[in-house]
Each structure stands twice: as structure tokens, then as C-alpha cells.
Image 1: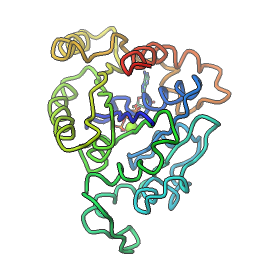
Image 2 (image 1 turned 180 degrees about the vertical axis):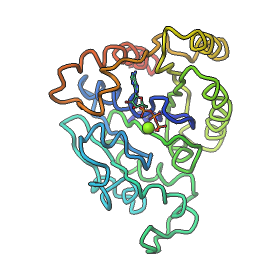
Image 3 (image 1 turned 90 degrees about the horizontal axis):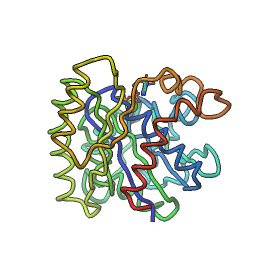
Image 4 (image 1 turned 90 degrees about the vertical axis):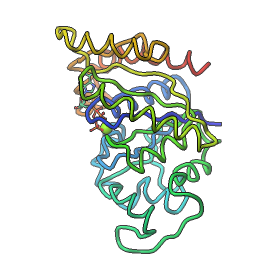
Length: 264
Ligand SMILES: Nc1ncnc2c1ncn2[C@@H]1O[C@H](COP(=O)(O)OP(=O)(O)OP(=O)(O)O)[C@@H](O)[C@H]1O
Ligand SMILES: [Mg+2]
């Protein structure tokens, strides 16, 4: 049965999509059959892994997969071990569908179950088809994120060393706790990843240490620094990328820590 891992924080630009994409790629290279579910209407991890504009997946996305509970029809194959349920701009209307049962074209599509378990019910259709399912979430505690937490066994919390990010953590952890109480999956925080670190900045050092004091068990030992090659991953992708090894070097360490914690 797949282990389902959400990458989240309601703060923008903290490397959720990059980290989900990089770790999914490493899992797939290691022989694990991996699905990435893009729950962010920005479609960033979709573009990162498919090398196509997210708009290519209009009408063929995770939104339809959830609405019709037919994920296999909408899954895009990157390679033998790596698959994506893509998203696009229309996923911004996910909440509208959840609450009014109407799609962007105003078609009425009813559903069974609760508002926050729709993604979980879709994943039930494919849980046995993968070793890992990684979910990328938007920078908000919206229905996409609560559905993701509800459907997950684990959550990796992203942390960029800044005051606003530090302020965002308690509310995110509260959402994780609520999900633990209501979901049979009982999402467990499996790590907090400090990202986009700038070694020259003393305030970054301060917040990195502060978050480690607050969550000593949770922080990964590896701290991801800003690296041009990692920042260029959306441009060069994972195929025929001369600097891929350098771009992923820090993520290889996080990967080892993650698998160890999960117990692989
Ligand atoms: N280690 C890194 N070094 C340099 N650039 C990075 C690194 N990690 C991510 N980036 C870049 O930083 C930006 C934000 O990263 P990303 O899109 O992964 O964050 P996000 O949390 O998913 O953002 P959003 O909240 O908008 O979904 C992107 O331009 C990405 O390419
Ligand atoms: Mg993102």
C-alpha cells in the first residue's frame, strides 16, 4: 500500500513544489513507483515534472480525477516509476465544487462523503498501485490542503528561515492535529525541512536555530541552502540536465533522512 506524504505550509515560496518534485524524482530513481499529486492550482510541480505548461492539462487534471473518482484516467506518466496527477488554474474552483457541487462549467456533480475526504476517496482507488504518493499543496490552509492532510500518512513541513514563515508554523501544526483527530490516516509529521537558507544572513541562522529548539525531533539535520542549480530545476528539468547531480545533491541527504524516518 502506498505511503502518502503531503508537503505543506500555508506560506508561499518556501520550496514545497521543488522539494516534493526532487524527492519524488529520487524515489522513482531508487525503484519506488511514485505518484505526485498536484493540489496547487499554480501547477508548479506539474510543470516541473512533465516539462509541459499546466494549461495543457485543462480537463485532464487532478480536479476531474477527484470529481469522478477515476484517477487512472487522468494520470500522466513521466517514466516507468514516476507519475503525476497534474493541476491547472481551474483547481482554484475546487472549494466551489466542494461546497456547491458545481464544476467550473456549472455542471452539477454530487459526491458521497465529507468535504474534506474527497481526495482521500480518490486515492483509495489507487492506493495499492504505488509505493509512494507525494502531494504538493498550495500556500494556503484551503480545502486543497485540508483534503491533502486528511489523505496522508505523513506530512513534511517546509520552513524558510524568516519571521513570516515562523509565524505560519503554529497554525499549520494545528491543522495537522485536527486532521489527526478526524482522519483514519492519522497524518504524522515526519520532518520539518529548512529550505532556501542563506548562510550569510544572521537572521536566517537565528530562525533556523529557533525552529530547531521548538521542534527538536522534527527538523531534518540537512538544511537546504539556496543553490542556482536547484533554482534552475524548473527550467532544465530532470532529463538531459547537465547540472542535475549538483541540483539534487542536498536533497539526496534529505532523502536518506526521510526514508530512515519512514522506516524503509
Ligand atoms: N534550494 C533552492 N535554491 C535556489 N532556488 C530554489 C531552491 N528551492 C526552491 N527554489 C526556487 O524558489 C522558488 C520557490 O520555490 P517553490 O516554487 O518550490 O516554492 P513553493 O513553496 O512551492 O511556492 P508556492 O507557495 O508558490 O507553491 C522557485 O523559483 C524555486 O525554483
Ligand atoms: Mg508550490
